[in-house]
Length: 177
Image (cartoon, rainbow, N blue to C red; front, side, top):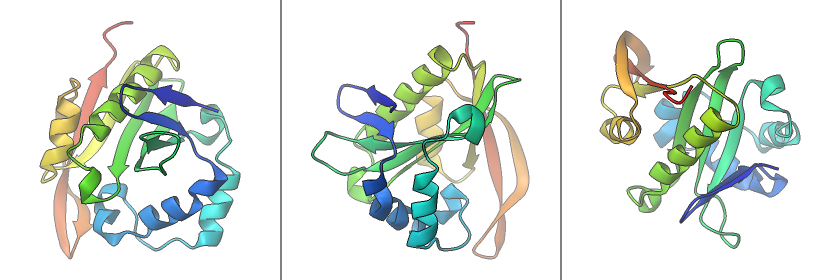
């Protein structure tokens, strides 16, 4: 089981008891635009997903981890490596923190920092990228804090509330290689 510990949070592999948390996040329409979700998920589908969450990142091409504050509290968010491409040593990174009360508390920053370190040190990735809506000021600030640079804009990329909106691609190259 993967557990990465920071000063105030840790990120860990998903557990069967995360079912209700993941069900709530996947069905929270207020964050669908950042999670690229389009339809509700049933508990049955989330349970099936959790049963397969043990797959290695090389097999699943994704690594989803729960963000927690300590052993006694449930998950506060999820952080992912997705579109894992071991041939080209790159992956996408995404994060969602549930609940406004948990945002702007440095939880996301610490989780992103831990996952960047893991991706570069343990997976030997050359680069990470994040897809961020151009209006998402908080996410742009979070990723640029760690050196991600905007390398392009995908015009009219996402249809949100009947309007096409642009999406920026932010990239971080591992300078340690």
